[in-house]
Length: 203
Image (tube, rainbow, N blue to C red):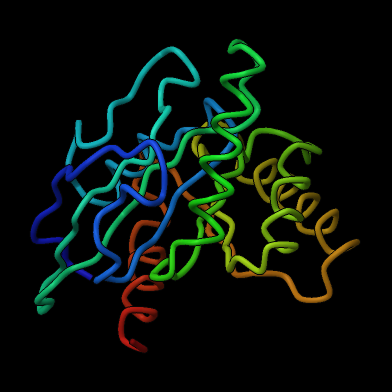
């Protein structure tokens, strides 16, 4: 897929205020500081589209971007969701975010899949496993994107990916598709975009 254009549309505090569900939609979410904004910018080829911050937890709303690929008329929505697991917020704020995410993930009818971002530098983290299991309980389709593969030796990245998938297999009979990416080296860009293109083609 060649990206012709990508631009920010709106930030919404809840699902009911999101744009009309008239296009296929793909959401990106992960633990805070997983490299989500950098990945979105890499995928769209638009530096600065999603704001990269040195402070984890800056995304607090449901952020919609409209993306158009070559040969597409209406395009598709890319959604930047708030990261989970960031503790430096009040209990009330965290509860509000959880309610917002739960409402969006369970009610957004045009949501095709959620890309769950996992830091490839780390061994399996229980908070990521818990979130994925929650998606399963809600019946929300998802895939896994391992980020920051350039920060490790290739063998170490492969080991962490294998460990994570093995841990996930303990509670899942069938594992979702996964992608290994680097925003710096643009690793995985074509595979992720081709996957989105294939889902768009089934609609």
